[in-house]
Amino acid sequence: MSIAGHDPRSPGSGMPAFLRACRGERVRPAPVWMMRQAGRYLPEYRKLRARHHFLDLCKTPELAAEVTLQPVRRFSVDAAILFSDILIPLEPMGVGLRFEPGPILERPIRTEQAIASLRPLDAEEPCGFVMEAIRMLRRELGVPLIGFCGAPFTLAAYLAEGGGRAKASFDSIVRMMYERPELAERLLAILSDAMAEYLGAQVRAGAQAAMIFDSWAGILGPEFYARFALPAVQRIIARLPAERGPVIYFVLGGAHLLEKIAESDADVIGIDWRTSLSGARMRLAGGRVTALQGNLDPRALYAPEETLRREVRRVLREGAGGGHVFNLGHGILPDTSLASAERLVDLVHTLSMEEEAS
Ligand code: CP3
Image 1 (spheres, rainbow, N blue to C red):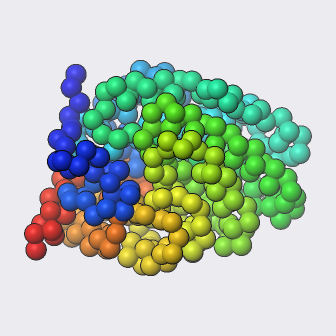
Image 2: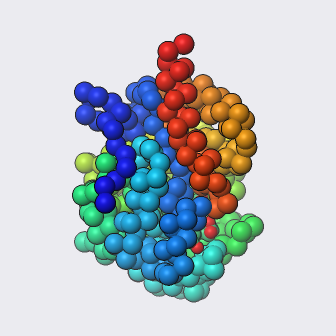
């Protein structure tokens, strides 16, 4: 089957629009993809999911590649993100995992003994099924492929808690930071080493960009963030192979941390809907950040067309001061309509051109 998709949106330049925007170029039409674009709002995903457990989809290279391709066939998105989960590499580290649908870990990791029991990831090819899916995808995809991992703090939050219910407060990891800071640092260092191997292997397998998800770092104040979460991310980025593409770092609810996030050494910073892109850009200035990614509220996809159009225009305008990859401020919600998702992608492409002409 042919993959919908890719008219070369940047004639002559060779480099895809998404990668050029990540480097800080002003690209028109503006590139767009959606966090969680492969998932439950797609009928073809639900159909496959009815026959396979989520973890089996992740662990079978053919199926993970197929699900990655589903949104690329349907919409003119400018990038694909590997279908997997941030918790997948915890299993080979010795922590069994299941989804119901929130993640549940076989045992919490809170004590010195539990931390010592974690196994390092195989440096050769950690999670070979992920690398195989990436190699398959690179043969088929017409747009850049984003590999990803969880940031050490966010993974540590799930590990200390033993999973993550919808409204989890993740007190266990913060408690460890107060009670036994050296233990928290040890856990973060182990996760940092593992994720450097894991994300590095994805780059070597062919991922053209690498995204680090710090979904829970927003629960920290600036001091704990700077002391615990930030160095663990810097350590991953410093150890990625030289041939790596742009690194995108996303902290959900990280507005109060932006000045520290600027020191992460990532090229692109993901911003959620609670902060304006223009304000974020000012606060990140001076660091090495080349572009921003974001930040339409995923719930704007429930709005009528006129409202969605207005919101897309606003995000484009606020993002226009430098490199901008259009995205949602967090994952697309499972009950989003296909028509709305399709409309979003098309609006970003057409409205960003109008803006250029005016
Ligand atoms: O399209 C994509 O974005 C790629 C796939 C992807 C998934 N998870 C698939 C998934 C990515 C990049 C992730 C990252 C991830 N996983 C994060 C970071 C991003 C964020 O959302 O903040 C986090 C925190 C997780 C952990 C996780 N995985 C949770 C809390 C849940 C359950 C809640 C939920 O959304 O259902 C998952 C399950 C999960 N990961 C699903 C999918 C498609 C649903 C599984 C199903 O089909 O039942």
